[in-house]
Amino acid sequence: MDHALACAASLVPCQEVGEGPLLNALFPIKQGLKMFIIEDKGGAIAIMCASLLFLGTWPAVLTLLERRGRLPQHTYLDYSITNLIAAVLIALTFGQLGEPKHNMPNFFTQLSQDNLPSVLFAMAGGVVLSIGNLSTQYAWAYVGLSVTEVISSSMVVVIGTTLNYFLDDRINRAEILFTGVACFLVAVILGSLVHASNAADNEKKLSESTNSYKLGKDGGTETGKQVIDKDAPKDMENGASADYATKAEAGTAEYLIELEERRSIKVFGSSTYIGLGIVFFSGICFSLFSPAINLATNDQWHTLKDGVPHLVVYTAFFYFSISCFVVGIGLNILFLYHPRAGVPKSSFKAYLNDWEGRQWALLAGFLCGFGNGFQFMGGQAAGYAAADAVQALPLVSTFWGILLFGEYRKSSKKTYTLLAFMLLMFIAAVATLMASSGHRSTK
Image (cartoon, rainbow, N blue to C red; front, side, top):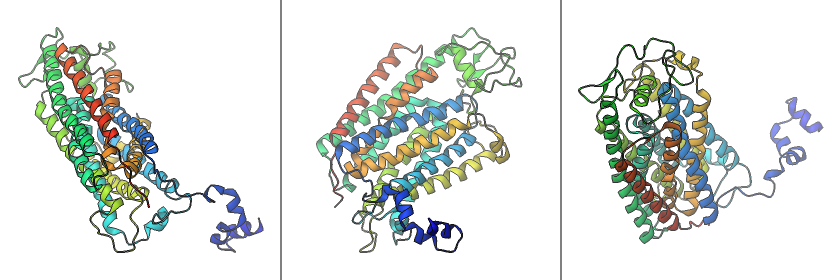
């Protein structure tokens, strides 16, 4: 005890106390324990299931805020902060607690090692993920949550899984793996058809509406002044004007019009191809971040010097999240003053004062951060190609889309049929990817 008090009084170096009996008694978790690394297929599948839940839920949270009228720039700035905090927490717990294993140094040790090539691969993965996430935030408004997730996730599997299979030295069973990839490719086609059919349903609803709204020449809407006064005070919870007390039933033309009035990204009158173009661009970005982490943690291209340990997955994820944070913050500060997609102009001061829904944006960042971290942990154990099974997140997103946002409510039988086949094909694809799981030796 006297030794600890001396440290507090700066008379004794704190490192000595850290090696003394007091701290060993306070932190017994490190004594006799090894760094936590998933090494069996069962553990990998379990943590990938948790990743699936988190990665399927955070888009629904951000979509909810956008539909309530919160500016996407404000939301994404909040999200970026907790997304980075999640990576730091993973690095300081899983990556630091416990004794290091052979060729697996602890987090702080790796920060000072000569592993720049692997660090750059990890940071490149964070850059493309950040751009992809930012793109999907606008794509959700154009084509809906479920279709966006299905198309972009399916592209990840078609492109990213193929790259990871060869990077992982074919540890996954090819005949099963690529059957799943083919199913995902079919899901992409079905997802596009679902969106086209649902867009046609919505256009029909608007054209048949007896409301004072009418279809514009480009498929958008023109509003009657007596329905909603855009200058009227807004309800902070639902984003609707106080003068518009009646909440329209989900799936009706009135619901679509009311949604367009209160949401932050205006999409009426926009071409279907704009939304799909954004989705496919984000899909390409998402396809590259997992192979980048694979290269960072396994050094398949032999860029590290002899004797330098590979980046442990926790360290790689930390660098990955640093670059994701920098790009996300930078682009969204730019978008505050130069917005896109009809979003109102804002400022950094306005962002700091915007507390409406901030807690949900912060939650979304944690969900995405831990979801990505768990995906990489599972991929390091069972192969990154098999870990792409977490791209089943559209199953979770579709559930939230239907439950929270009324997507596909009162749609045609054709839309329902296509949606059912899309989800069935998606389930088949995920099952085959899980069945292809291999085992990566940590020795």
